[in-house]
Image 1 (cartoon, rainbow, N blue to C red):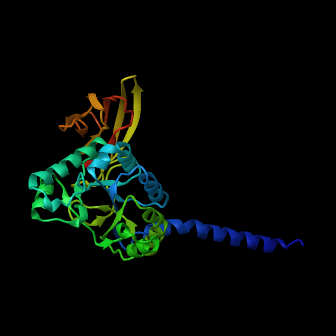
Image 2: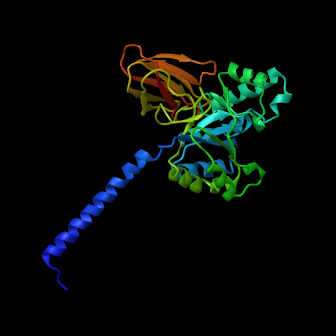
Image 3: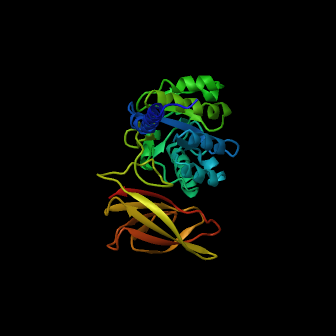
Length: 330
């Protein structure tokens, strides 16, 4: 049957109006998605060869970021997975080296557990953590003092998923449903039930107007992510006013080294932290003032009057991975 022209036009107009309404919906939802604040999804005891990749894939595919409290011995054994955590947009925290009952140790042994983990994570490309979760949640003033001496804030959790105690996926999802603004949930890297819970956790947070955030090293609470671009050490929010971002561009390559250019946007008073992957080292730099920590893997770059783009020559030692970057306003 041939429809009257007026009916066809009316139908087309209705379809266009409907399409416009659909097109406007996602931005409106996105603007309201974090209306009720931020929560901290945390995963302890990684990285693990059998589960970390699946965990990261599940988080990324569901649009979630989380904090990975790595043990030093696992980070040292699996440096590529530490780098993968950062590349996936996750934050990395310190969870001791061997996961002992820390309160049974001397203060020097406590410090060793923490400092060795800092080194292992940094060597894997995870930056330098600024938050520490004590194994089993056991802490006291002595341990907190040892952590503070290394620039670490001690954080525990508000909600325990009980995944370590055999909780089902449904029970883990139910535990996450109790989170409120600023709170942290304890989960672990190495349980399939925990990985399987991620899609439902993501849906539940979205329904309640909550987003997965970072853990502030100032307050120990979950807050909106801030600072940096690309692989970063985002456990430290940028101090001061304003923010900046970085863009890495690969340059010329040789058999033993490669060049990279780093452009800074958003501020002319910037401080960029560049984290290399062992056994890399910087053998030349230009257009910035560069200082290096004792490991030689973490560099701090500041403007030297030559603009907001600087460069590095990195002797790769067999590791061609680009450095991690974070930026803050100085």
